[in-house]
Image (cartoon, rainbow, N blue to C red; front, side, top):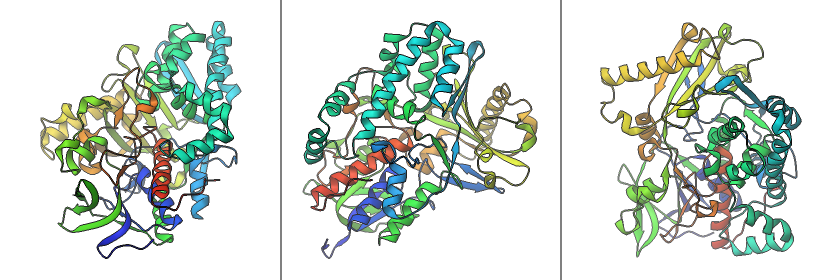
Length: 508
């Protein structure tokens, strides 16, 4: 597509998060020129890796869907289909357990890849609910079956919706009805045991940071059913392998990813987005701008027109994280220890700041992440930026506060990994202030969450109120999580390609 003399590309993408990179890669492969600007020296945002002292750590995400070889996995097998489209191979290692839950009253549940083993594990602990367990998870399976049959595309694209509806009328109607349903309320149709319902809350909280009643049934069907089909697969080399491969795809087809290039504002002309201004003062222009920033950063920081400001109260603001990246002696990890864990000591505060510990040891799957005889550990708890605003970065008080919280998290984690505190040989700590600084995210937040009772379709789509400005990432449908933001990138690319006159082919 011919560009005007002042345009740097057809499409400019702000930020190299997975949603934006996915959109850029698919558009570039289709023949549109793309230019991605990234503040940091590496891509991926929350889905990136970094090296320290011979260890490779996942900056954030470490549980990955979408890498199955199942050809029928519709909208749910996106990574495999995207990289197949780009002609790029990302090697992965299958994980037999999604998460091992360690909950109050001795409730210990590994979420097995094998669905029957998982359901039997729950039925053994709750024999009086065996029938209800199967009926509830069958509901999630039904969502999965519908989604697996539908191609990924933009919900704002009438042509796409018409094609999907025409070819899959019953599935389309059924899915539309399910968008009004809550995971938690569906569970309560079949299950009454309070402890089991608490476990189902943790199934939702593990990725959505909301209890099951606040989590849409469709989202649950994606994450909790696909783990028994596509499964959990860890990319060799760490989470950074995913954005690195997307960047390779962009460049393979002639696109550009520019690092250490922070966007300071979005340029408007006659009320329409026309380009971006970088922190160095340079300006770059395009037909279309895609923001991978949060909805608050996009409209309250990057867009200069105050008429488009978004109140923080429009959505719930997900918390940020306090994270520990630990290099440890391998002797501390026992045989048959699973990779991903969630630890809750008390139900009363599981959803409060720091109440739940997330824990992973990905070097159990990929030994290349750590030196011989060592392992990488990533532990993290929710935290709010407001809890850290009184500290000056780099001050003794700030370091002491981080060390104190880290010691508490390590001590609590010794419930499932005795001796951890003595095994730590390397420690890197990150607070919400770190997330805010490195990721340019409003208060370091995990993004906007729907309020209880809001329909999943009320999540912002890719089109924004500013003409020629589109959005991708966790501020858009369907929400948080790597596979969710990947879908947002596919949807965004589909919408833009249709508008610019060269629609994307469906992924296969």
